[in-house]
Image 1 (cartoon, rainbow, N blue to C red):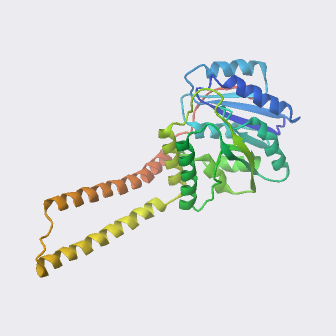
Image 2: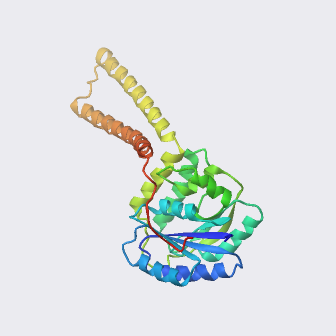
Image 3: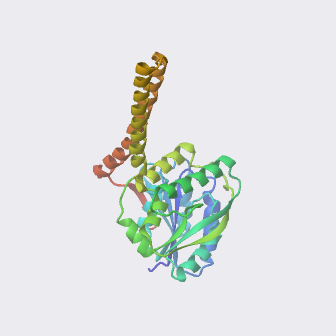
Length: 310
């Protein structure tokens, strides 16, 4: 059967929101008058999310389910859903209802106008802390400054992708994925639909600070070599400063009566430069580690169960 629209929803411990998320998505999709499929991707949930999804799928043949063998991560779950989607257009949306499903018809209208990527642009973030809003603002602008690929500011993973875009992304099997960055990198005709981001319907965020920092690291190392170039620049400046300081010490010793600083200064400088070296090595190590991940050739994800797929 030809499918016009596929909607991909990654799930990780979403037992408190899956029912309401399904209800609102179903109401929107039924109102479109188009053939559609709804794909829930269970990313190794440890609560009753999978059992609830199975109960929903028994009564709805348009609801397809994928379940991973373990938790592979949010970006990987999005990728698996897009890989399995059969629609001419594919929408990615989280289950927490911060991104409203009611915006999907506007995205579909833009797609019919000829746009191949329609991303949701957050004009306001309701219920988010000042720290979260500030770090998000700094991150997006820093990433754009460090990369040659322009990423829309204040846009998340909520977006519609044309079939041609999904097929292109399938040919990009890199492991440390930053999907919204990959979508910007492939190009095609892109536009936005504005919306107000709501508070999470229930439960707690699945992106604590540690995961946010890891995602930021994946984004930087996947789309920019500037941290490596920055290492060279800092090393050059420190070396130049050390050379000049050495000349100053020699001049003071030979031509003035000023006493040359002793062990305290030497210890501080040694600790500072050793710390700087370790930081630079850490940056290089991040890139080397990602090269190692790519060369192992392991599958990006493992699907343990598939429900309602032909």
